[in-house]
Image 1 (cartoon, rainbow, N blue to C red):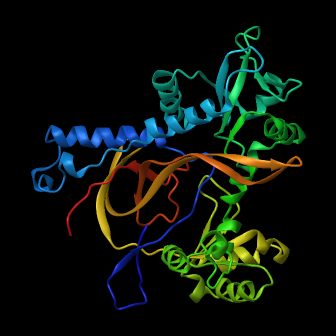
Image 2 (cartoon, helix red, strand yellow; image 1 turned 120 degrees about the vertical axis):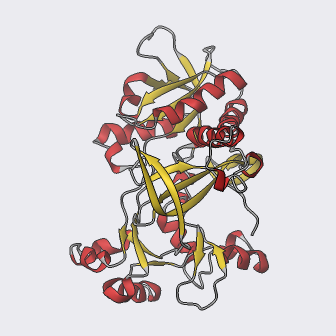
Image 3 (cartoon, one colour; image 1 turned 135 degrees about the vertical axis):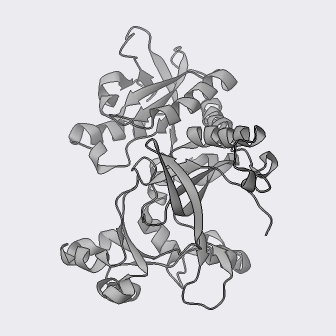
Length: 381
């Protein structure tokens, strides 16, 4: 997001990172479609005459998220290699029940088949143990419920579920996650990559004066540039930084500049500004370390029009730009243990998503009902 420091007289803006998502990053499918829609509307002069000098087709960069994300999954399918069981190969989309993002996900499914010849199936997370099994070589075998006699060997498991506590209703769902993780299928993401995207890991890297970023970026100049994009994030534990953060979070005046985030994904889980002190009072102090305290990103004022739920809404808006990426690597394994990356097979930018919301809304999740899918318009300043 674009950040304008409210405490400084300097009006210079900067780019700040909101978060880093490594599982079930939504709206890659619809992002491409919205981008195409805006480019089409510009080409037929559908926008008001006053905006024609700004909104031109050449100023609306297309989002390549559908073909790029599908290519990433196809690269995983390719790296898996030929079938070892004699069955046809497939990619398995693990989805929630009910799945509200089905029309977003379908675009990736169609692109996989049309552009790469890879068959994909959708499997509700709670049906994993019912519709799959592991053979003696830990190959994951999927039997479609509508045709149980025609089974497939799974090359890639694409997690669009499994990140929310509500996905784990009991022991069978935890067994299902272990069942998938033990399989030979390529996991998107791996369990370690899933955990690497957690708020706690982001806090460890982004806490001011943290020594951990240097582990990944030993070049001090590069590390300094990356650090500039981080909004300060603090723990709520008993460390020196955590004790200071607790003071900031419990004071209504200082809490005004912060957001409290739990280790959750999917939108609608955060606590903002003045609500933070009362929320902490309502929680056992032993639960506080499960959250991180992040300094709010303060975007400059913008106005626009949002079409949502059949209504046109005009007023102040905030935009949040997301850049997709696909990454595939082969690990070095010694003595049955992973020893890190052995070979990088694929690492590419994969299109973008712009989410726009009203400036009175703190949350930005589209599926959670706060934002709308948008596209970028590039202008000279």
